[in-house]
Length: 93
Image (tube, rainbow, N blue to C red; front, side, top):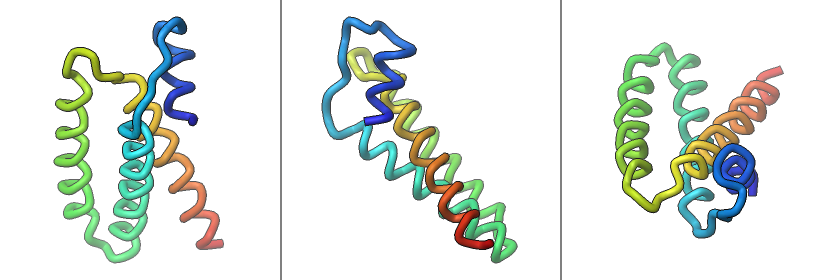
């Protein structure tokens, strides 16, 4: 839901994003947060950065296809990563 809200708020508010891809991007954002936190804990941050970078590049290329909602994908990725980092860092305390 948050990812589609980014699309409507930041993009053309006459077009509503539909589909599962924005939700999948939210799960990817959560996975990125998990990789980042686990990489920091284990000291293997370089491997985490490499994996996140590869997946982010793939997502960027997919999002640049005409007719695909870049803002919806970005919103999903951002909201998933934000919620994931908040949850994982809160869990450490």
